[in-house]
Image (cartoon, rainbow over all chains, first blue to last red; front, side, top):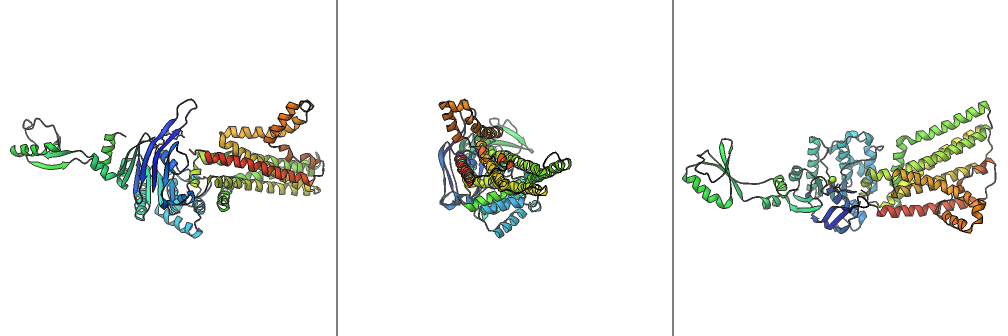
Length: 299
Length: 257
Ligand SMILES: Nc1ncnc2c1ncn2[C@@H]1O[C@H](COP(=O)(O)OP(=O)(O)O)[C@@H](O)[C@H]1O
Ligand SMILES: [Mg+2]
């Protein structure tokens, strides 16, 4: 749906200092129909990438292509993109309902549709009770919810959510994740940033990983885990006289001994265990979580 | 540019400012006017109808300028700094449409302020036996035009500098716009071709605010030629169009971060 072509963004900080490079030749493609996690530590450049995508800021070099599906021009493209900002600050003196009406009207949505969509999504995201309150009285989590509703009422093809789960209570996080899963089943594409690995691993199929403005990985989460998974095996065996296998390190684990070995040593180890009559409790290929991998590639 | 989009933005801008209780201030100004007139009439310091007119137009001029400067300086600044602008610009609307919509919203607030205080002034003026003159109406119109000119200048400055400087620059522009006509009339300046030449160039850039001050004409009941009204109307329209275009160009280039 969207292709980043070597997007670089420099920020001028002080007049005499050299500019700060927030995005460094960032290239990746956002495919249709998936939940794509945009992962990176604080300050990695996620928000900058999203702002460039939404044309709030211009790239220093490089370009972003918007697929035909989203529309031929800016107007059509923005009709098809729903956006939830990182820190949703809204007009403090408008009520939630007025905000939704404002956004709905800019999108030329019929009054009755604005009404029904607002109701539907604000009930789903449990913010319907506060629709007639001024936004200045909303908590951060409530703003996040009304912001999500405002991104949804225009029924966009692509949703761009900047740290949508930050600042939500556990129930809210679950409701947001549920909403994301429902939306992607409806055929929408979701691009959401997060610095929390577990969130990305839990909901998204694809992931784009950034480190200090540079792309580290872009693609399927499972594939990343598979590719980066080691050739090591963990064997859990019953306690034995440590002299028998003194050339292998082992650790105690729940009354058993755990031995980690390379794949090519597995056969030899099995033979030795058999010849020494050591019973095997469990053999398992080490499967790291996304978290392990990220720590390994050092983000 | 699509008018419908502009009108939506202006509607909600108006609503937002309206709900921020600014209208209370407008009615307070009306109350101050009434009290002043009452005091004057009770203690007969002077002619109360004249005071109603003087104070009423003075308050109108002061409040429209204050609204134009302070709300104008914040109008886009706040949107950008608190990032509410993202919420709107991530929708099918262009930056120029957004800009014109915001401006129009505050324009409506200024218009409302002018109408309300104008009506108050006229009522009090009549109540204390004032005699109607078209000049009173035109004087209100000129105060309004002047506030629009100030508004677009503040908006322009608010896009290129910070809040405080935008306010300072705008007030400086206003004062120099007034002063420059006076300076041009000074004998010393008139006698120096270089000085008068350069001043006349500058006076093309800095708006001629003295054009909008009809206070003397009103107080001394002088007649106002129709061409004068035409001139100030066209002048403010052309001048503010240029400033708005400049502001739109800047906003279009601007990184919103
Ligand atoms: N307007 C700006 N001027 C200077 N530096 C900026 C600006 N915006 C962002 N940065 C810097 O760019 C880097 C990336 O920021 P950001 O995209 O917000 O990170 P993330 O969203 O991944 O936490 C940070 O180091 C941040 O300080
Ligand atoms: Mg961020």
